[in-house]
Image (spheres, rainbow, N blue to C red):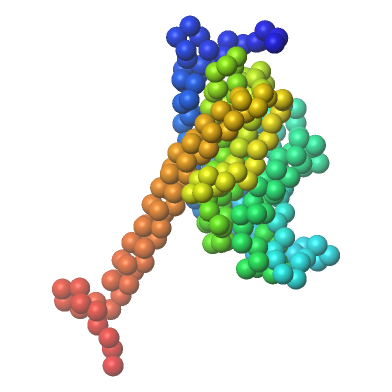
Length: 262
């Protein structure tokens, strides 16, 4: 094996950003960040930030692709020019962005209940605002939340994580230097069942190492799902509370009793 170009783990067993091998980066999830869309979210994992907007179900822009018994899922991925770590300036036709878009579509087509939306299109627009590793898993996590925000029926949450291998030590949630230097795996799973909807390898891995990394990744996806679910529940509670206040504030008499006019 070639010598690593960067120090992946120091003598104390810590990574460059002071995380331990199984420690995830700091995460932040927000819903409804782009009101002009039907659903949207912003996900930040470490220094990687992705915004996803969902449009639909709507009439397909390309009617020749419409299906009479299900919705078609389309994905576009873009990177802003100033996204650090994203490499050279990329356009929508860039091969790497097309690969990310295809992976997102393949991840969600089995999870979205497309049969509920025949003859329609669900369009997913992904915009990478900053990049320091984990663009694909961050995009998948943001897409899950944007679809939920749009009210689109899913079989389950989809959560995603990257796993690398340094010598014999697996590392969770890779930064850009780790991603560039290590054999790695990106998985997306349905946390309730543990089913895998994506497993993407950039390099070959021994089957024993692959199974170890896969098991570790599935457990990490469960942790991310809990964080994502917490954001959804908090938002739902706020909506219910606002509606309760609005109803309670209309036509009330003494002691807050509802008044019904004859």
